[in-house]
Length: 161
Image 1 (cartoon, rainbow, N blue to C red):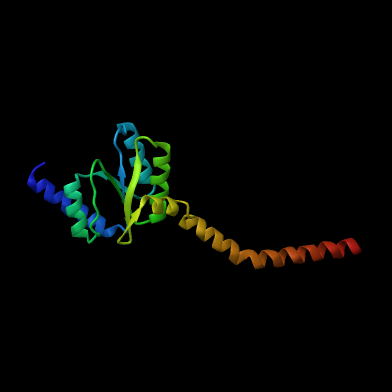
Image 2 (image 1 turned 180 degrees about the horizontal axis):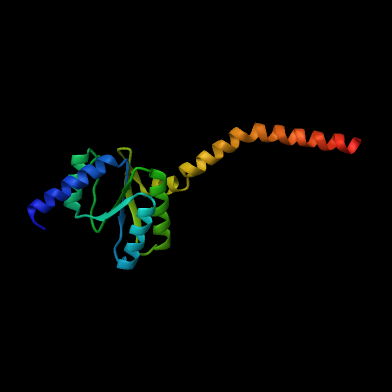
C-alpha cells in the first residue's frame, strides 16, 4: 500500500469513526474466509461496517476521530455502527457461534472505552423496536382493560336476561 493510499484510508476511516457512536474491536485469529463473509453479511443486515485494519492506521484514525486512546495489539477486526444494541447483539451472537476463533476484546460507546463484559450486557438489552413495542403495549393497556370490562359487563347482562 502506498503512502497516499494509506492516507486516504486513514481519512476515510476517521470520518467513518467520527460518524459512528459505537465501535467494537474483536480478535479474529483463525477465522476462515467463509466465516468472515458471514460476519460481514450479519453486519450489513445490522447497518454496521466491518473492516480489518492495520493497528497503526487504526490508531491514527481513532486519534483523528476523537476517540480515547486505547491499546490495540495482535490481530484485530473493527466493527462499527450508530446503534450500540444491534451492534452488540450481532457481534456477541457471532462470537458465541465461533468461540474458539472469534472473541470480543473491547469497544468504545459514545466516546467511552468499554470492556467485553459491558458489550455482552448491552447485547442482552431489548432492541429499539422491542422497546417501542413494550411502550405501545403499556400505552394501550388501559383501553384494552376498559373494552374487556365492557364486554364482560355485556355478557353478564345477557346471561341475567
